[in-house]
Image 1 (cartoon, rainbow, N blue to C red):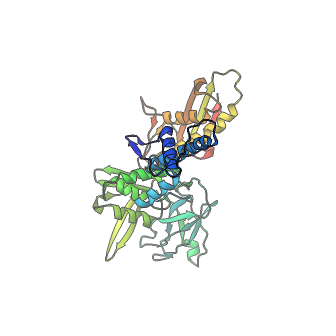
Image 2 (cartoon, helix red, strand yellow):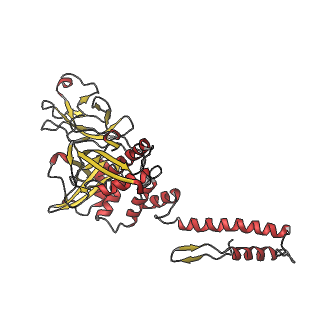
Image 3 (cartoon, rainbow, N blue to C red):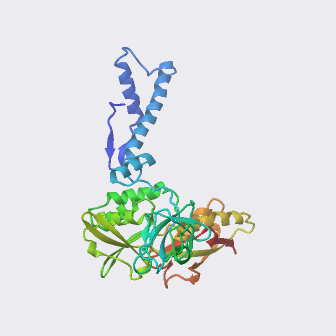
Length: 402
């Protein structure tokens, strides 16, 4: 095979023609076996030659496939991971639900909250990762806490209000905790498709200080949800939105990726801001970024069909609901819900039991944080708060035939 040339076209490597493989095989065998011939039909020699040509076709195609995989567009999972290593990013692992909490005690400035401190919302427990201290104003900075249990669930603001770790007197009666903003639901391991998108973005990075560069660094931080990373330009500078991840790791990524820290601004809604002090000895820098609030979405889908005796309605409902939920939970922070994309997700999910040609009705009723919403006039999109992200639970999506 080493003597068979590799022919490259604009579309990539070209498989070698079977006739060329056969001739190359016969020439190689004849070079070491005088009077060898494989052209007599019905002979064992010809049969072996034909079988070997089949093997060579498979080997040559494997060579073509291997070359075609050396690209973010078509790389297999292993080669894609190697490309990610070269770019300094690795495929995201499963993450637990996390939330920022604030401790308060006006009588105890200077009281230390150690890492490992446990708080709860009454159902799930969260562990403080980096620790902090009650400041002179009577409250701590927002502290990053991660759920002890795996899984994904909504954490509304103000619900993490129970202290589990034992406290000495008198702090056991005066210290309180709450989460000013919603938490970030846990995420499954990153899909190959999602990782491929990040590798392609990393390949497009032009240099330090560009939004693409900062996004690449942030999305490489363990625990950060890629869809919750966004950089907004405002009159006063650039606002960096990042959901999940240890705040010091997030701040370090911003510090490493930004040329001018003075251009980074926080949200006008100060409760959304996370401020972290990074030390690059002998200097210290305050890094601010926005922890995106969660907008809880419910979707009610009503569909119908032209088929008079259709009996797979329950299957349609079972297939469509998770597809709609997956679509909502894939929308990048600040981006709108597109009802046309939701319709495509519905149709793709049910095509095995209901041909889209037989789908006569499909309507969606959507609520955000309990309020019914409609698309913008003349469009099929439902706008979002530019600093927030959508989240739909399994129970928040219903599908019914009507």
